[in-house]
Amino acid sequence: FFFLKDTTDQTLTVVTFLISLVLSYFLNQSVKREVVLREQLEIANKRQQETLRFITHEVKGYLTDGAAAFDAILSNTFGSVNDDMRGMLNEAMVKNRNAIREIQNFLRIADFKTGKVNYARVQFDFKRDLESALHPIAEHATAKNLTFTSDIAPADYTMIGDADQLVNHVIGNLVNNSINYTQKGSIAVRVERKADSVLFSVKDTGVGLTEEDKAVLFTEGGHGKESRTVNPHSTGYGLFIAKQIVDAHHGRMWAESAGRGTGSTFFVELPTNLRPTLSGVAQK
Image 1 (cartoon, rainbow, N blue to C red):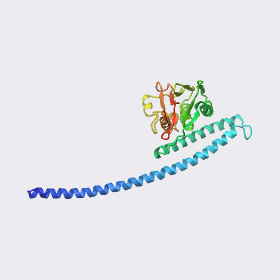
Image 2: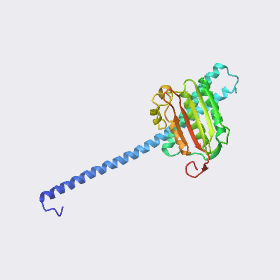
Image 3: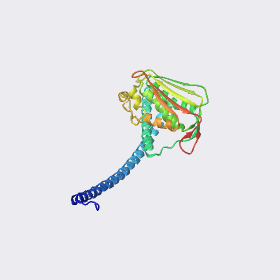
Image 4: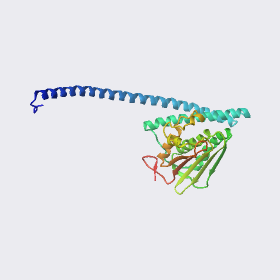
């Protein structure tokens, strides 16, 4: 301004400077409002997540109590159960377990988003825990008139990690998915020990997967193109959460299929030469 000699240039400079000041003021106020709104939104989201977590946790408790009651009745604890009643109770038990699994999915999603995911780091027998988990799942397959087979090669399956997350959620989710998306045919579970890992697979004769399906299979809320037609209750969170758990254990998870209507095979490979660490789940 001081070096300008022309009055017109000086006037334009002053006007430009004043306009800049005014615009800067309004921009600053806009930024402040945005910051306040963002803070309010974060508080609202946090409260919403806490409320959702509380509600789902309570519902899970009620469903778990119901599952225990169904199991007691089916075990003839209160007297013999006729075939008609047993069939009805088995169907109710399957639906109850599915509801518990979906509630657990919502709880895990909330944990992922708030950074509250914790994994146990203990030594466990993968084979023993898997056989225990497969028993009620096999009943689910039988109830749908599907042939269920399990082939676990003889070996030492000791590993370190979170047995509940790996066996009950990851493996349980994959096998239950195979049953849910298979209308007729068979479900075949296979486990084998490799040099430094355990390879699990579940093969079905269900709806199969296209390349488009595979692209979204392990994403949050991802669904196959026609998955809702076969399983309208799917939320799309199960495989996403399972993939996060496997990744946290430094494992691999993938699916193979020749296409629509050809069935699918899901694989999980978990390392066995892991040792506990203070950060993460484990390291090689």
